[in-house]
Image (cartoon, rainbow, N blue to C red; front, side, top):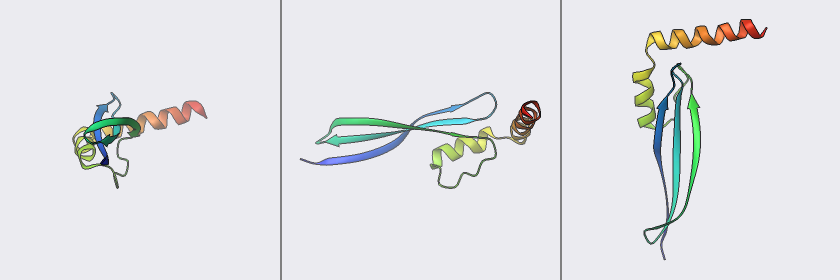
Amino acid sequence: MSLTKTTSIDQITIEENGIVLYREATHIMEDGKELSKTYHRSSLTPAQDLTGIPANVVAICNVAWTPEVIAAYQAQVEASRIVGA
């Protein structure tokens, strides 16, 4: 009997405002048969520090987060602060 645990990024989505959502799947396998699968979801905002983020997610962020996307997101955040004040 051999148990193994693997993780993979199985879903990456880019929202209209530049937020990147990704899902990491963790598989527990016994002799090649899946015993369980769990998910962990995370989100990243434009210009967020990407230290420790999986390389394939960083690659998507680097393409999606153009200077225009970052500026628009920051303006959106600032506008919501003014309205909420």
